[in-house]
Length: 139
Image (cartoon, rainbow, N blue to C red):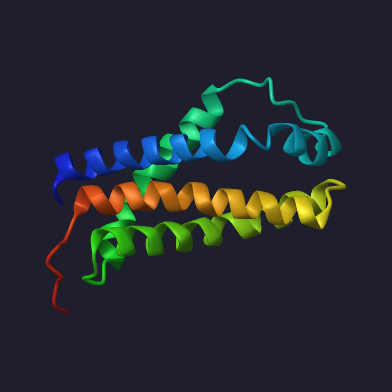
């Protein structure tokens, strides 16, 4: 493994995810607060440490997994495919589980899952662009 490329991909994935977060969450902040946080008894004024650690963790994991699933396509299509898949893989179960714990409308949960998927897709795209075209291993 090329550690330098891995760390650069993780950094790009974290930045991509964070930029997408700002673009997707801030315009919908009052809706999400009213329909997800308030019913859950949560606050948007919490510590940023845990969300930063979560973003870094996710970026490190995604940058590690990405080369293992690379199928030889363009960096853009491979990165988006990967990011969408990872976003669906964690976004849907996360939001449905959260919705089972608190009185949150199904529509708000679907929007949240979509936002998580798009946010993760942006991270996957950034990771794909850093890795670029790679030689596939023959097994």
